[in-house]
Length: 229
Image 1 (cartoon, rainbow, N blue to C red):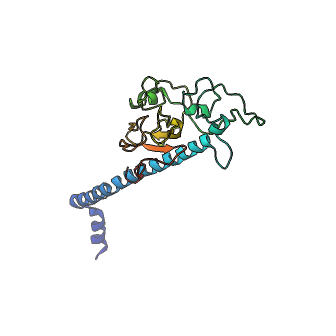
Image 2: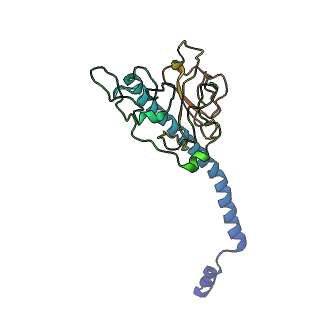
Image 3: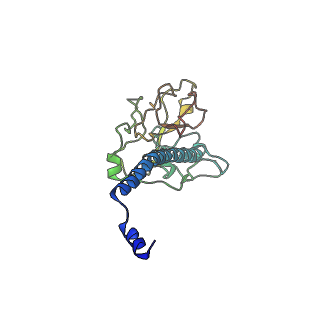
């Protein structure tokens, strides 16, 4: 091959057909990779949420590192001293009327029990699904102990940046004490809470992440596996 002919070959570049073939190959590869990446991201968010809920459970119930809110307040879940049914994880960050922990009596608030929490922005609160409603004693089948219009209190968020809520039902079918059925709930990827407050697991949870605080999960199979949700 002469030098002149070789130079002309280099200068010719790629044809439109060749370029089209390359683009088609790239599009095909993207079609294979994107669903895998999306599923991996959803699985990772689910696993992160499960880990966060385990950390919250330890802050409430205590563990090897010491007593949690429940033990420090004589068997109360996070709530203010004056309103023991006003359950909210914000009381892991603020006393809610509880006096400082007294080592002699073994009673009192010695938080914060968690080091990371945040406050919803107005935009984030407005975008919450309507299943994030304020709990009311007059509507015991309400789905959440959180008023999403209140954006100034400290929350604990799942991996989708929505509040993890604390449900304590009025009745418990597997125990005489409703407190035994207390649980943490994340709405999951679809942003809808499907776990009614007076339900120990009979209804579908869909992609909700549920973690009971005192008892084993009464629903056979518990949560959907993260790689299947």
